[in-house]
Each structure stands twice: as structure tokens, then as C-alpha cells.
Image 1 (cartoon, rainbow, N blue to C red):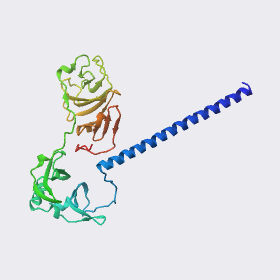
Image 2: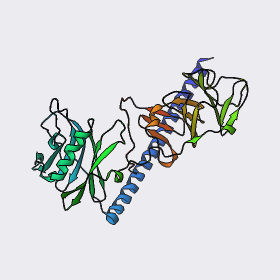
Image 3: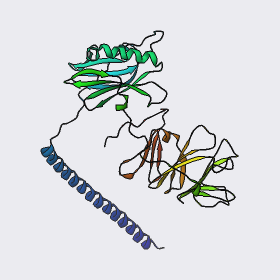
Image 4: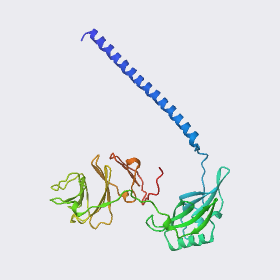
Length: 343
């Protein structure tokens, strides 16, 4: 290559760099203009919305701490008129009786701070008697939450190992005051369905016999718990016992009929609920047809609801999307329950 050729190559490289740089600047300028235009149009739309519907701006006025007489585990709070009730649990130690002040405190916001205002708001002879009996006859009672349903306030207590084992105290909310009604309205406070889909139990006509028999889940995946392991396959091949997912079972000698197997199909996701023979607990597995991957997620047992617009599933310790993406949270929380959805 001559010196002249080298100069031409260098000039072409410089022109190319300049051209690419110019193209980048043009695209960047166009995107910036589109962004400014979109922001202006959104601001106009928002201004028009405020004129039609009105708007109340939300902003943090201040942050404040509240103090209780004893060290406690906070559970919930609820506003009533110009006050709010704070509910918590304390360890009473050697005392044989739990009193209302061990669970509830009432505060009023005054001059930029919360001031404890006594328990007059929830003072009622019958309530105090019912409260005393609750802690007397249910040894493991803990305060769970407040619930406002219509014009009524429910104080919800967990009295058993299951989060749905509850007792409630019902109050009428009237002009910023409370009137105690009864402790016989447990049936009025209920959690919504914990699974927003129905589990379908597999039947005999779904069985596929062969050297390595399995159960067909609508011919989309194939499941079995024989031969010493729980296996999930994506091919209807009974000649092989191998699949895309496998884990051991307690009883290696069980037959295809011995396990309890339920399933639910939610778009590209297949949820499985399986209890191998004589095992105490169900195993929960989610399978994605997009990625052909199965993962065991036992927290689905507690609750599993649908994400908006069919995006996937959410459960106490994470979510599983229709795309096959999985996110699990690093938390030790147990026995979580689905309470409500705010759209």
C-alpha cells in the first residue's frame, strides 16, 4: 500500500467517524424533541384532568415517632375521627392477665406531633369483659389487624396456628366515635379466595401406561411420582423415565394412582399441586411453557393470585411471569395471606 493510499484510508475513516457521530447527534436531538413534546402534551392533559375532576396534592408534612409503655411488635393502625388507634402485641412476662392497654393505644395529632390521649375512645364495659375472656380462653391469642367494612370497625385477633383462625370485636363508627356492638361477627370478616384459579384433580383417564408410566396434563406436560422420584416431562414418552425436572419422593414403591395431583393452567404457566404417597404436605411447582422450565415454590400453598392484564402470578415470596421470568424475595416470613388488591 502506497503512502497516498494510506492517506485516503485515513480520510475515509475520519469521514466515517464524523458521519456516525453526526447520525448519533441527529437521532439524539430527535429523541429529545419527541420527549419534550410528549411531556408538554402530558402536562396539558393533566391540567385538563385537574380542571374536570379536581386534584388534591399528596405530600409528606412531617414524620413522627410514637412510643408505647412497653416494648411491642406493631401490627396495625386505623384512623377514627381526629384520632387513630394503634394495635400491637407485647410480651406480658409473669403477669397472668392481658389488659386492653397491653394491645391498644389511642393517639391524637396535635401541633405537629402525636399525643397519647387515653383509651376513652374504646372504653366499654362489655368490650373489656369480652377482651378479658378472649385472652383467658385462647392462650395463644395475638392481635392481627384492623378492618373497616362499611361503617364498622373490626378488631381481628388470631387465636390459632392458622392465620384464618380469628376472633373479632365489632364496633360501629359514628361521627368520629365508636360504639361497641359484639364479638359474634367473625363470619363478617373473611379473607378473599387465596387462589384466583381452581385446582383440577387428575383422573384415571389421564394415565399413560408403559415402562415408565405418567399422567398427562392436557397433553402439555407429563407428571409421575413412581420409581423413587417426582418427574415432569415435556414429551409423552413412557419408554424413558427422564424429564426436565426431578426430585426424590419418600416412598419409592408407590404406584401412579397413589399420589394426589392437581393442576391449573394459567396462560403459558402450569401450576402443579402434588402430594406423593403418604407424605404430609403438598409440593407446589410452576412450569413455564415459554422457557420449558419448572421450579418448586411451596409458598404458593399460602396464596397465589393473578397479576393485572394476564402478566403472570404473584405469591407471598415472589412472582412468576408469563414470559417465564421468576423473582423470589429473600424473606423468612411464613403463613402469609392475601388480604386485598388495590387497582
